Image 1 (cartoon, one colour):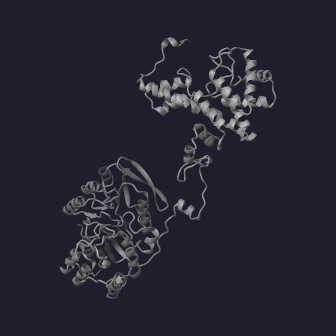
Image 2: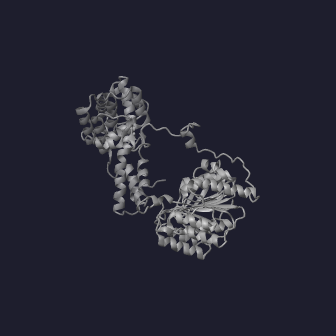
Image 3: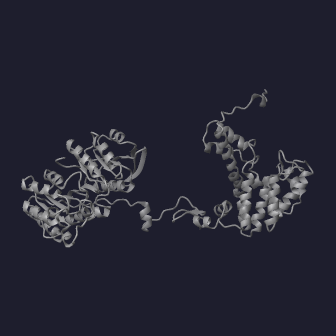
Amino acid sequence: MATGTLFTRTTQALFYNYKQLPIQRMLDFDFLCGRETPSVAGIINPGSEGFQKLFFGQQEIAIPVHSTIEAACAAHPTADVFINFASFRSAAASSLAALKQPTIRVVAIIAEGVPESDTKQLVAYAQANNKVVIGPATVGGIQAGAFKIGDTAGTIDNIIHCKLYRPGSVGFVSKSGGMSNELYNTIARVTDGIYEGIAIGGDVFPGSTLSDHILRFNNIPQVKMMVVLGELGGRDEYSLVEALKQGKVNKPVVAWVSGTCARLFKSEVQFGHAGAKSGGEMESAQAKNQALKEAGAVVPTSYEAFETAIKETFEKLVEGGKITAAKEFKPPPIPEDLNSAIKSGKVRAPTHIISTISDDRGEEPCYAGVPMSSIIEQGLGVGDVISLLWFKRSLPHYCTRFIEICIMLCADHGPCVSGAHNAIVTARAGKDLVSSLVSGLLTIGPRFGGAIDDAARYFKDACDRGLLPYEFVEGMKKKGIRVPGIGHRIKRGDNRDKRVEILQLFARTHFPSVKYMEYAVQVETYTLSKANNLVLNVDGAIGSLFLDLLVSSGMFSKPEIDEIVEIGYLNGLFVLARSIGLIGHTFDQKRMKQPLYRHPWEDVLYTK
């Protein structure tokens, strides 16, 4: 066990199992105390590497993240404190690994429930190698104005209230982390404050004992008096009794063992800590208090008198000239995090993203205000979800069914079209799913599947202006523009696209009006008189019918319809639908383990 100060203003720690809040509290304490360097040198997160961004005052810093204890110790040889936030399942193994590192002097184990046999092994190794274990089941410890472990002493407001930003003259040790906070406050009220405070943890076999720390405090010149808060259960306090009797402690000790109320109960009482259970008269709070008093400690008559006993002991030391009270100063203010400042109404900040279609802040995500559970409970389908996320309203069933039919009909058109071909070639090159999908999607445009918006745009403009089909077609021809939605490489007037027929039949059966579709059919009649392959294709059918859907549903204004067409909603349907087929082709090639594709020479015209 170390015989003097554990921490200084230059002490740095390695933090095991990343927890943002306790690390930020350590860094805020550093800034409050005027430290020049952060007390957290590195973070150990098994399996992860990189950096974590945190604040050191107003400055944002990047703290290295290491995947192993060994790597962290090698990278930060001056960090000699290991703060272990691992769960009770892995706390012992990781703590032992840290103790075996030559650079580590102190290990603090936060977890509760560490098996006693594991703790005994850790204690034995620490004692044999002159190292210190604080915990398990501890909040940690603090050296005022220098260094603190994790959440020790709570919030910055509490730390300031307890004057922990600068050193005092009192060494304090307790089993309880929660009661430590209470005593820091009490000691600050009646003395010049804490020099160092340790919570050893409430387990039956702590890594270090009350007497270990009292003997250590006795060797620290800045500590002029000690305060001890024990509890019923176990016999740890008796080691302190022996130290007092043997004259190993020559500074005043004010002590109280809590749990005197246990005698009021007829049966044995288990208090909060695993070790807070009296196993007989010697382990009772009364017996321990009496033994401490007889050994020379200042022991009050009750916990209520504890503060007075601390105050009187401190005042005697001041009167005797042994303590010069610490000078007060105002610590620098800790910059408030933006989020908390916004919540408290102190500042306002502009947002960076606006979203009107979904909200994930509640108990469950909502699509356009409709809870996800409601969508499932009502038996709604993919078309309904698209209507909420794309159009921000619940469209009638015939509309959402039409959307679903479009997706099904456009999901795939065989392996020979450009999108599928690209996806297949990419998949056979060994690329991943996303790369293969994107290579296929990038072929979508005016010549492949991307003409739905243009078809809707031109059909709507011509129909709304009352142009006859031949006026529309010949006008486009004069501009050098092909009529979007008209023409097919394979289909003919006597061999219509079955997909177009299905869509037209559904619309005539369910839509209140098919004005734009009928106009597209009239255009097709005229173009077929020019050439047998100038048929209404699936792009033209979807484009014209979607106009009818938007208009006849009565749920969209004219500006909204124009905006939907202009933004590219309708091409979005083709992109969504064809993604299904492109993914299918990718999986198909990978399932068959197809080799790298090379285009055959005989299919290339080599020319000068």
